[in-house]
Length: 227
Image (tube, rainbow, N blue to C red):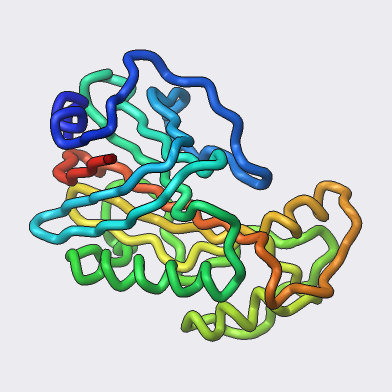
């Protein structure tokens, strides 16, 4: 969509310049390939409405406390929005809360017509299976079991020997759009950088972040609004 369409469809008043911001602990922007700049990073509370070909995803009370949404324009045209990254929460989540939200998003995008990337698709890009383990703490052992469901993903995250930091439960696409979700355990991310290790509250700790990324494939036709 165009920047003008984004402004017209949103009650949120977008600033002309990119506002300053500070990300929450454990957060990082995940730009797609060849993207180096963002135009807006919003950390104020907001309500999200995302429309795609007649399907509506609505989530109130996102953002705040530096749980950001980043909106990026195409490098070839500052008038086209081609990437959105959403921290899909308003506070740090437990593992179970993160998995519930992830499953809901997974189901919504599948019902909206998104599908796994085909290995035969000539368009370059990463092809990963569902529940792909992105990162583990250094010296952790590889996770030995197959992860084929959200219950399996829960067991994997609670495996202290494998100490999983990040997992991508799904990456999906249509002919004109891509979506991917990453779940991150910020405590383990800090531990991997040198913090003291503590697995005593692994099942209940509020250390999980959900980063939802949506990008245009060659032609973008999705709609997003922020209130």
